[in-house]
Length: 193
Image 1 (spheres, rainbow, N blue to C red):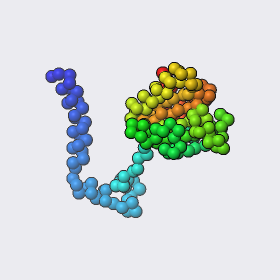
Image 2: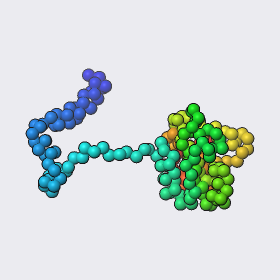
Image 3: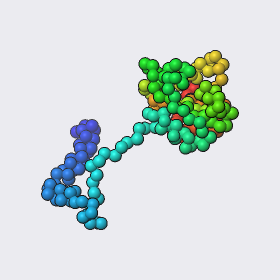
Image 4: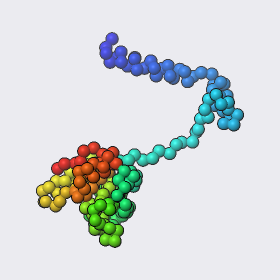
């Protein structure tokens, strides 16, 4: 008998046993599962809920959820704006193959204020979170930003890809400050050109 056949049999046995244990008499299972919470004995089976539990979107799928995590982990991220096509100076918002959700967080340590719209919601004033159509598109965006910054001497920023999100943080953050943002975002290493 081949190694693959042995593994298939070894993996099938527990599944078969689990399936058979669920095939017991319907009378006992129904009586136990149909008992109301009021009539159930304290040492009896727990009541089974048939209401589906709502599942929160993953951190890498929602810019607003990521912004919540960042604000919790980095208290100086105070100003917040859920951006629209009207606020987007890049004119990418909602266009085919571009980002469809953007949240900006202004950081009080960088000298920008809400009075000047955080310098047009520029990453130099905090963190911008962009949601792209796919992880590949997010990775391409972050790589493109880093390449342009390096090739044209346009400054710096810390970019992290988390799922479909690009977390763009000001290059004015110190390495230790950027690490706090990275940790709060549950991100891997910064993107390099």
